[in-house]
Amino acid sequence: MDEMKFNRQKPYNNLPLLPPNKDIENNPDILKRLVSASRALATVNGNLNRLPNPLMLINTLALQEAKASTEIENIFTTEDELYKAISYTQKEYNTNPATKEVLKYREALWAGYKSLQKFQKIDTELIKRIFNQIKETTSGYRPPQAQVVIKRGESEFRSGEIVYTPPRAEGVIEKLMDNLIEYLNNDEIYSADPLIKMCVAHYQFEAIHPFQDGNGRTGRILNLLYLYSKGLLSQPVLYMSKYIIINKEDYYFKLGAVTQRDSWEPWIEFMLEATEKTSILTNVRINEILEQMDSTLEYAKGKIKWYNKEVNEAIFSQPYIKPSVIGEIIGKTSRTTLTKYINELVNHRILRPKKDGVEVFYINDDLIRILES
Image (cartoon, helix red, strand yellow):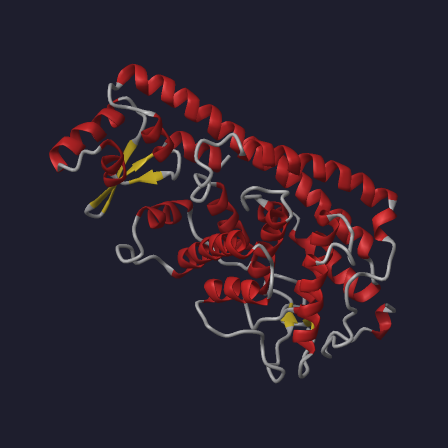
């Protein structure tokens, strides 16, 4: 596309359908990146299969991804608020708005994961379900009269300036989204490598901008679910948003370059590098958690008679834990008895108490050190 002909203030209703009109699959630089990213991702998948409980990363790596993804949208919370919030039931804890946004992202990710397990496909309903969970709404694609535009952030030079106007016309979003879904699902017609398709589809989703709000978070969840749907991840726990935060300026520049100059290659290389670096980071986190779990289990069993594998998994499933969780595992519901058991964990420095009002949390400092390093 001629950059001079692209008008940022007019709806991009002629956004090209997928696939891109370029031979990106045979580009040597892209192929080199693809090999590295594929290898790194395969290692993550192998590591996930080493976990004793396949869902134990919901409140660890998946929570870190949720926090980072909301930070990209300038929604910030603290680890402390987040860890406390997941230790309560929804009725028990009145969390602040930013923390609530992070938790909604995590819930949307896992709702999409469960839906994919059941229905085995990415479709319009799945994408809308993710969006509805993030935004706590029942609405679908934005209507054609909605004057949605993308502006520069407040901290940027010329803040408030329109940088992009997504498609806006009767039926155009539906047409573009149908094409995107077909591109993702139909590997006979669109036979590109799944990782390349993820990169291409992520641009297209952000360019379509199908919802009134929450498109960035919905799109990043869609990336993980697509990798899961293609068997490249056994769980959607890749910590990709941290890489995007560190390289946020580059991310948006290359995203815009596809729109303005049809510059697909740098964008795909960026996303493949993000996948590779993120996979390496995720592997480090999983290895550290598994090694620390083994070390804690060996140490605790030598000190505490009742300590077992199930208790060990529980205290590594989330950074802050309530005594009732451990009580359920060991079959001790008496407050006095449970207090005695918890005090053993504290005395041997496996957990650390932290008072918050009338509530006391028990913190796994070893797990927090790994997650926040």
